[in-house]
Structures are given as C-alpha cells and as structure tokens.
Amino acid sequence: MGAGPRRVLLGLGSNLGDRAAHLRAAVAGLGDEVVAVSPVYETAPVGGPEQGAFLNVVVELRTAASARDLLVLAQRLEAEAERVRTVRWGPRTLDVDVLWIDGETVDQPDLVVPHPRMFERAFVLVPLGDVAPDLVPPEGPGDTTGVVRVGPLDGPANGPAAVRVVGPGRLGGALTRALGAAGWTLAEPLGRDASDVDLADAADGVDAVLITTPDAAVAEVAGRIRLDPTTVVVHAAGSLGLDVLAPHERRASVHPLVAVPDAAVGAERLVAGAWFAVAGDPFAGRVVDALGGRSFVVADEHRAAYHAAACIASNHLVALMGQVERVAGGVDVPLAAYLDLVRATIENVAALGPAAALTGPAARGDEATLDRHRAALAPDEIEAYDALVHLARRLVDGPPDRAG
Image (cartoon, rainbow, N blue to C red):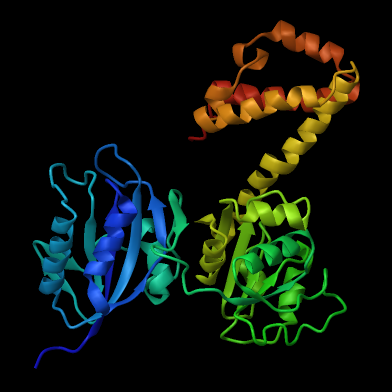
C-alpha cells in the first residue's frame, strides 16, 4: 500500500521571458493537488552572473508522490518552460525546487530535502510565511532587502474581506473609501481617537480591525478590543512594531507610503500602485493586493528608521519647499516658478540615483558661490542651508568609512 497524501512545499522562480506566465503554467501543471499558492514576490538574484530580478512563489501540495517523483515532476515543468541550463545559477525561465516534505528527509547527490538553503534565503522564507508560517524560523526571514510583494499570481487573494476602521481620520477615511471601492465590506467605523467609544465588540463580525488612530493611542485602543483568535488586528502606524497590538494573537501592520492630505485624495493615491510597508499576519498582504499596491516587509526593529526615511522624503521635503518659498518671496519670485525645477530634479533622482542627480555649487566644490548664497540669506535661514550643503557634500564624497 502506498503512502497517503503528505504536505509538500515547492519553490518556483522565473527571471526570463514572461515570468508570471511561466509561474502560472507551472502551478497549473501541478494539478488539483495544489492546496495554496503564496503571493508573488519580485526578488533580487542571489549568486551567479549578473541577471534580471526573479518572480518567486511557494506552492503547498497534498500529494502521495515520493521525493523522487517530485524531482521528476519539477524537471518536467522546467522542460515544458524550455529552461536551458548553460550557466550555473544563471537566468532561467523556470526553477522548481522541492523545499520540504512532511516527515521525510533525503540526502542524495541530486536531491536534498529539506532544501539545504531554504532557511537562509529571504526569497524563500517570505513567501513561505504566507502559506506555511509554522515552518519559518522564530527569528523570521532575516534581511528582506530586495524582496518586494507584487500581488497574487492570478486574481485577488482569498477575495474581499470585512473590516472595521477604528479612527477614521484622514488615513482611516482614505482606507475606508479605497477598500470599499475594491469591494470589501466596511463595518461601521469607530471614533477618531476612540477615547469615549466602547471598543469591546469592535472585532465582532469582521475579518480584521484596522486601527488608524494617532500612534500614541494604538496600544490603548488595541487593549480595549475583546480578544478573538479569528480576527486580525492591524495598525497603520509607520514607526510602531507589532508588540503594541498584544495580546491579540493575529497581528499585522500596513503602512501606506503615500502622502494623505485628505481622505478623498488619499483614497486615489492608495489605489494608484502605492507602496506599503507590511509586517505580521499575511492578512496585511490581502489589504495590499486589494488596493493593487506593492509592498515590502519591515521588521519591528527597523520600523523607526523606515518611518524616519518616509518623513524625510515627505515632511522634510515640504519643509524645504517652505524655505524656498520664503527665500524666493523675499525677492518677489513666486514658488510656482521653482516647481518645474523640483519635478525635473525628482525625475533625475528616479532615473540616476541621488548621487548622480546632484548638481550645483556644492557638487562642484564652488565655495565662492556658496559664500554668496550665505551672504544673501536671512540669518535664520543659514543653519538649514548649511545643513543641506553638508548633506550634498556627503553625496559627493560618498558614505563615511564606518570600519574599525
């Protein structure tokens, strides 16, 4: 009598041709033994020659196939994708790895199970966490730089959900509008700061509670929601970790990397291919997928630095434009005259990177011009000007040597 169906996990990747089509064809080729497919992640290549980024998924099967049968199946799928093996770890139309087989280890010249490097590679561990979080080591996937979630392989993941927003201010209102437009069910939202609202039943009848209160209130608000092991509690605070949602079992964070001046404009930006910082329960990915966004994982210990960079990119830029308005206004030049310069500069940064996009006197070491600028500025503008000159020089000189 043969062995009964077992849980099996395969890793699929592609970086040649129509990458998503190769992955879809491979999953279809696995037939009705497929139990779950992770979202697609775009990942930087690891090892081998210079090559393009991969799309990766992890697939869970229930199958009675032997380890050797699974290897034969993987090789057949690769052949059907016309994979050509010319360079070790080179670009490929399809790569199928047998990652893990429940209750079995294999150590043979052409097959090792569990896969010997699966617990070292974020491009495996991140999608693995979506379909088999119990197999991800307690310390998590490690450095997830270069691993970007791009959405479900074929259609919305798990369909629309029901959520309740606590704190429907600008961001909460924007998320409510955007998720409602995506077909999600929105329960009656609860107050801006929720200080005088009974939150005990907030998790009743919904898949998730989304907390969009001011950061200082998140932990207190989460603590007032009755525990429900089936409901995800999600916060949208960029600088906070998941610990503020304790003791809820299912916790997640979804922080949109967008500027939200009001709910209407914010809703438009949330569905325009926005980036999101996510962490915790895979439900965070469902939110991103519903909004048609892209995401990256930020571990708790890196949240504050991530959010600082976000504020520099947005709030500090606004403050800098305030200085432009003041200095230019002093000589009767309107702010609008500088906005095309700003837009072109941002385009240069996007195309070339900050260092190559830098122009002007600080970039070329023109101290005489810098001195003329200082002489023309009001005394209370010089400190900020000098700080930005210092940062410009850092781009010219390169990062400081932190060795030793």
